[in-house]
Length: 401
Image 1 (cartoon, rainbow, N blue to C red):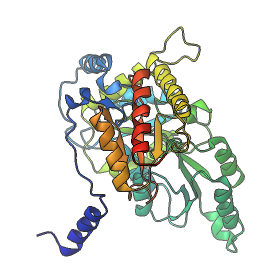
Image 2 (cartoon, rainbow, N blue to C red; image 1 turned 180 degrees about the vertical axis):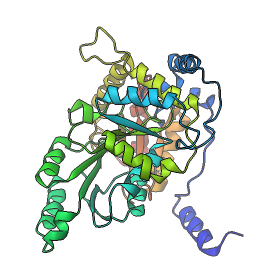
Image 3 (cartoon, rainbow, N blue to C red; image 1 turned 120 degrees about the vertical axis):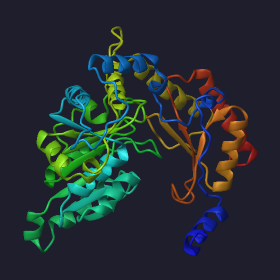
Image 4 (cartoon, rainbow, N blue to C red; image 1 turned 45 degrees about the horizontal axis):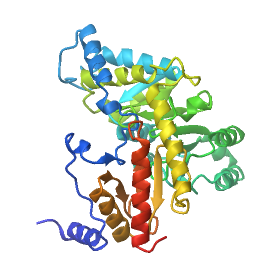
């Protein structure tokens, strides 16, 4: 029997029509519906060139083992890690990269070990759950600021600067944390303005690029040339890069510190060689630019961004702007309040062959439930038009228009 307190929580979720379940999402099933739900923005998870290139890398390095055999500090730091981390660091034009097993591990490892007792962390209220978990494991003081609200952030910085205990202020560090693309809204903060605030208040800047890497080529930190202005950039590979794992980008000293103090790196088995080879192969694919493109981007990145702009224009053409959160990213969210309503519309879209996931409370605040459209390089413009036409009809059926 499940303990009563736990059963009560399950019952509450059921009553709110918010109980999470694992779905059956086989590779075969991916072909039946038009994919508007996966994070495979560039189609790299199904890219055969990446698959075969990873195998070639393993052959070149004579790595023919299935597992890491231990943590990276014991027997699991196979030589392909050095190749991948050096390539990633060079690509992002930073001193060093440190690969973790997942984005969750990277965030928990970083935030539980870097901020020290007495330090202050200011984080966007919509920040990743993995960052929140890492912050909770640290000994630092943490305060959230309103989403993408620079005035609220500066207010909190100025209040700390005016603190009566100036000795404590001077001794302790302050960290400002945001995402370059937010996972539920798809929007972006003013990173340049945040860098200015960090410089004015002597704060360290940390940016999570989970949903920007690949979508905006190497991410917005690189695009805006801010790489020398941040303490750390966190990139994950399970989204646009189509594989698994994550990395913290920064200085050699930061890498050394994390190797010594990030528990999620120290006390876990390393990634198997094939996973690291796939990361390296994915980066090589991302750098495989179209020579005729002025932007120096890969075909996949160009096609994805064309689709994003087309989708946004179709939203305007169909007078759906009132529902959609403004976003230039691959995440386009239509706010449809109420778990019951948004789930029903998601099911209606599913009946017509469109896989669009409903995001329910408590994942998002009550009243902010939404359909989350994830766009991809492999979506056709006809598919983009059709799914929005069907959405407009469903909204009319529910008298939401």
